Amino acid sequence: MASIFSKIVNGEIPSYKIAEDNNYYAFLDINPLAKGHTLVIPKKEVDYIFDIDDILLGGIMIFAKKVAHAIEKVTPCKRIGIAVLGLEVPHAHIHLVPINGANDIDFSKPKLKLSAEEFNEITAKIKEAFQTV
Image (cartoon, rainbow, N blue to C red; front, side):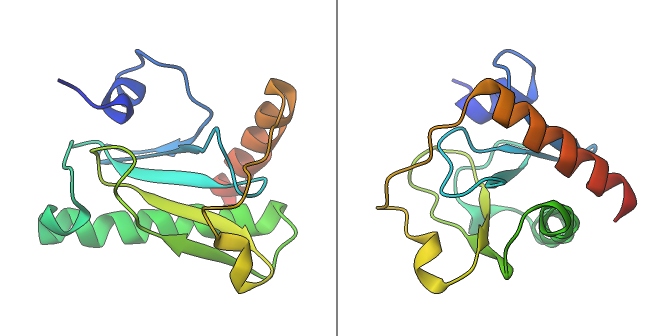
């Protein structure tokens, strides 16, 4: 059975897509810790990030780096934090979270509640910045 992320990649479930190429897909987390919180996934469904083959694993980090730079351009933050938990969805994914301090990437914190309009605005800004990175 396909994971929810595979369904997003296949267009079966809508997402706030930031970027994609042949191997990777980036989209806003709908339960974000901060505005701009983005998930980066390989299109190939692999449950555990350390089971991804070396070429794909290296590539996802390069893709995530470009996405992170785009988020940084449009989101007021000191850094983009990165987390790989891999417990919530059985499809490897990287969280890119705008942070100003170490406690900003605490997944036990309440998540932001954003409107569709806010998600669309953030998506458009990051997408545009991604084109210039």
